[in-house]
Length: 200
Image (cartoon, rainbow, N blue to C red; front, side, top):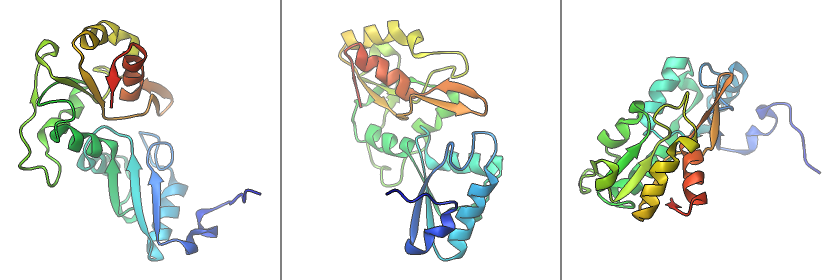
């Protein structure tokens, strides 16, 4: 039978490391959840290590800046790992070529300018127009507040006809930003797959 717990402290003594999702678990995109912050800080105070995981499409340093900005104290965590980190490494390793078309908001430009640790000597990746691209990197819609995957149907028809592979930097389909639901890169990748394209 499944054991229902009321607080992390009931089971945390048996662990030395805790992996915790960010969005919806530690914050809502605008503000931290005080009880979650307190639970993680208490776990660390007892000698535990906290690794925060997120599907955000940006390198972790941008996630850390966001955590600082919305008030998640550094006493609540040790390390942040993002899907953006993993996708960025794949991009610099050549997963979708060296000339890529970026689909995503301007706030994700750091994905292309901040090289991941250990990739300083990797060949350069150039952002180009879709008709010049060897592949696509998708970090989300250009305008996440108004666009849906359907807005990319024509782009994806053209990309599929050219055989372009899409690297998805955030597998989430949607995310709740405060009280608003917005589309993520995963929603666009799902449509590309549905249309017969290939996404990673």
